[in-house]
Amino acid sequence: MSKLKKNNVVRFPENKVSDQEKEIEAILFASHVPLDVETIENKLTKKINVHKALEKLQSFYSNRGINLICISNKWSFRTSDKLSSLLSKQKTIEKKLSKAAIETLSIIVYHQPVTRAEIEDIRGVAFGTNTLEILMELNWVKPGGRKDVPGKPIQYVTTDDFLSHFNLQKLSDLPTVDELGAAGLIDATSVEKSIFGTGKFYKEKQNENNDDIYSNIDEMLNDTLSDDENSEKDPLKK
Image (cartoon, rainbow, N blue to C red; front, side, top):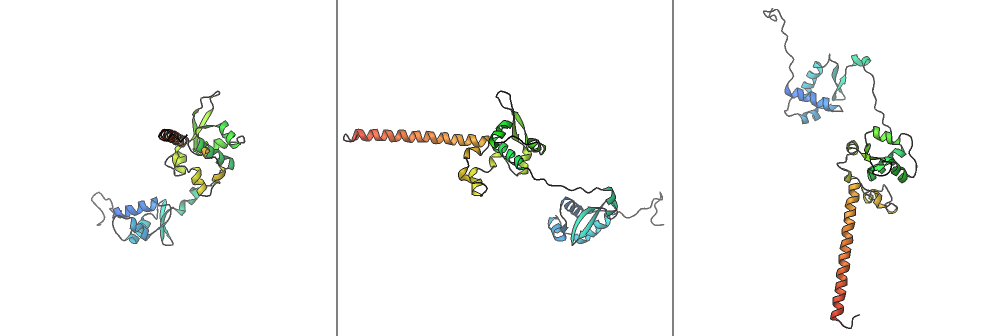
């Protein structure tokens, strides 16, 4: 018997997977949508017969917990139908934030660090049930120390997860009142600009205002000196 070795172990041909087939596996596994052959080809480091490789992988995974399937000429990995009874269907349900939660988050974003009482004062109404807790559960808001006033109230700030969720690099990337007005999101003419901006924004604006004040003082002094010099040159000028 040609398939028998000396130790009487039957040796079957090995079903090896090439480097390119491994790449196809990785590409399909990482994709959240089914892919067609052309898309897979464009991602490979070396050109091969992708359709033939897919059929080989499909055969390889046919008796496993995960199957490679083709629907409408697009390929993807799916759990085996034979194991469907072991799996429970999971569905992500998106819930919208309440108006109170959105207003509270906006105030914290632009006024941080800010206390609960300060948020209520800005909103003009008391907190609803679990408004802050919802934002903290999302990990968008966290306690940021205590304010140095009687009672030492907790201050709240945004987190890195907030920046990540809204695709911001830093808080100073937040839109200003002028940008929000230009986008048509608010009526910029009826909004006090000083309420927009983070602590860094306030500091930068304050420095700009100080520079403008000193600049104006210099101009006033120069004008006054010029007037005095002209008066001395022209005795008739009062």
